Length: 177
Image (cartoon, rainbow, N blue to C red; front, side, top):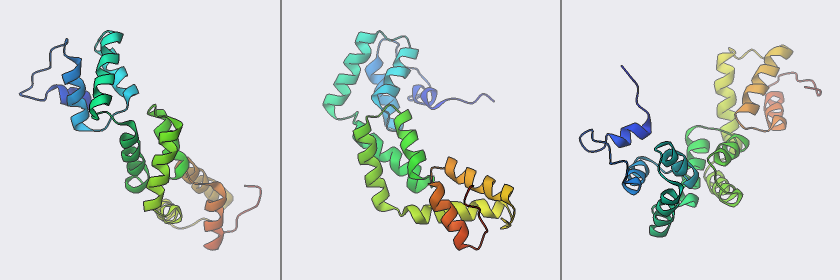
C-alpha cells in the first residue's frame, strides 16, 4: 500500500478530488487546515506544484492579511510540540524552529513561551530515565556514559546539566568527558 504525504492527504480533501492547479489559494487553505505552516513551507509546497512566483507571493500576502497565516502562532505551536509533547531540550527545539524558516524573534518568543509551561530539568529527568531504561540503569563504564550523554545532547539538553544529573545518581563521571 502506498503511503501518502500530508500534502497529498490535503489534496484528497473533498471526495478525493485534487484542487485545480490554477487555484493555489484554495490549496494553501487546505494545507493550513491540517496544521500550521510557515510562509517558507507554503512557498516550497506551491513551488513544487509549479505555481508562478508572483502567484505564490500573492497567496502568502493574502493569507497573512486575513490572519490565516501567522508565523508567530505557528512558532508557538511548533515550540510546544517539540518541548512539551516530544520532550526535546531547548537547543533541539530552537534548531527545529529555525529549520522551519521562522525568524529569530519568533523562535525566541515561542521558546520562551513554551519553556514557561514546562520545566527543563523535568524534561531532562524524563529523557534521562527513558535513556537509562535502555541501558538497564547500568552506567558504570565510560563508554555507556558517553552514549547516554551524547544521546541527551542530541535531544537538545546541555552537557553540564546531563553530567550533573548523572553525578547526582552516583555515576562516576570524569571531568574531561
